[in-house]
Image (cartoon, rainbow, N blue to C red; front, side, top):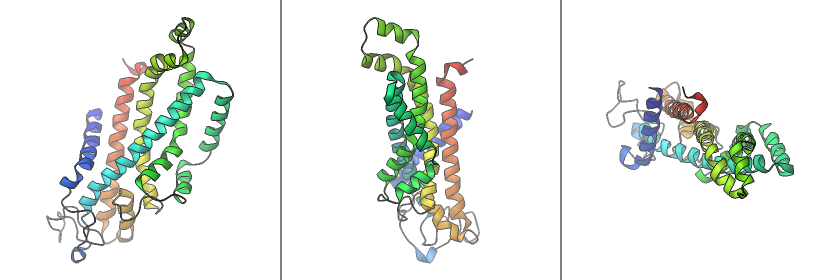
Length: 271
């Protein structure tokens, strides 16, 4: 049941982000000052043309949340691909070969993990132009160390397994062992870890935008929507609440999907 709920939630946000131009009832930047701070359709004073109400500039909250799904999922997806790719590669190679390179990498990982990743991301965003690609790179730089540590431990464990030792004994080259024997056994762990990290990056991107150091205010990300609505929380609560609800549902869906993948891919959890 939880797995299907996670798939449903993730599917709704992914499909909504992909078809946003056709699904959103209004352009996300369209301003109707005469309709500013209009309540949702189910409250007194609302209108069916703006189901979730309007913000301080008369922009449709529902349309901005739908487009926000595209932005948040794009940023978190790109950041996860970067973090998983770099972290898995470096962690696997260091665990397989060992030596001085492994020690240097692990000291670098420990130094970076000593700093809260959100503060590290804020520091980077203060010196780079705010756009989707840059914020994805910043989040990937903040998150690759998790993959590196986990993959190093797994590669160390696999290096001593009998099938790896046997492949080496019959003359298999290192790259063949890595691709044919190590990588397939790391794939389930990478998948589960990446799924979990997507939820973390959705929250991180929203937090950065809410603090004003993320995406430009003109872009309808969920963090920007919440930042716009915090000044009107008493008079127009729907701006803040519906954007926050979107973040909660998206991260909950990804979390449930990650739990299902962990149970499905980890043989130790199978009954």
